[in-house]
Length: 386
Image 1 (tube, rainbow, N blue to C red):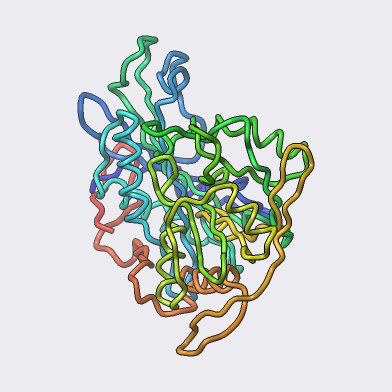
Image 2: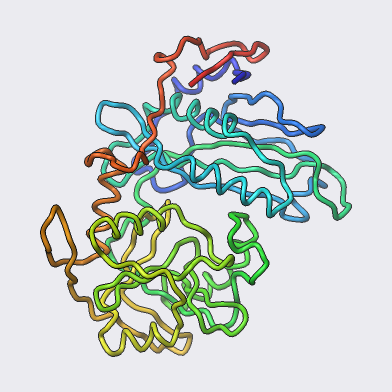
């Protein structure tokens, strides 16, 4: 793959220092990659210092919300260098989102190699504390500049990265607000696409939830508001009678990569997993009668976070009476919290503390490992095979 490289890259990398604390998503790596789509094809990506981009006020992204994004993580694995976690799944989901939003397909080469190049260049800034990572945000926006309501013919693909600590700094479990007024997604809509409008439409509920003392929102189905779907940016799991239950993917729920990873790990440890409809009535009754003994949310940013309670706008709270369950670990039946166990296994896989039987970790090669020099003047092109 060809890459244009700005001649200021080494300078900005040399002068960059991580703050303390680093927070989540607030510290941005000093470089980024951009690539433009014009006249029906993608151009040559550019490696640039991180900074503002120029767009016309009539760029379609501002008016019609034609944009998509992904969230990924790279982890420092001992002295072996950085590893991505299941990046091909992000690539596939990115293009599924692009299709739904009438945006162009991006090749695996451009998506994967630009991300690997960026990670390689900022690898010295990947934090090494357990739970910390380099959070990567690839996104695509529509840039054609006229006000007609029609799909854009021009787009910009951008990759930025953020050395980040854990998403939730406090150990306190979540309290979740049951949203009965607004809805997140409808059948046939954009619920399974990772597009900004899905998140923007949920912000009003986030404000309401915070005002009422809750830390997250639980979204219900749009038709009857009776079926549990997902959280704001996270998938939902409960443990009922020792079985793991998560809402089935119906086209209105984002197909979470962390979700699918936890399901695979659970099944490989003889924990029964049920992907099915979960009614709000079943959730509330299961908490009341003690059949539901755990609940947790999961996603790339948060990994896994336990839920202590669900609550209503009128102040009614359904508090989970937490209990241990039996599951299989290293050939033995043990008792414990299923959520805590799954998080430990997943994080150990991501950080290289366990062997990876699934092939989920993908090593990011160093420029030293390639036959190509990647530091060139911006007006030159470097051929890269990472």
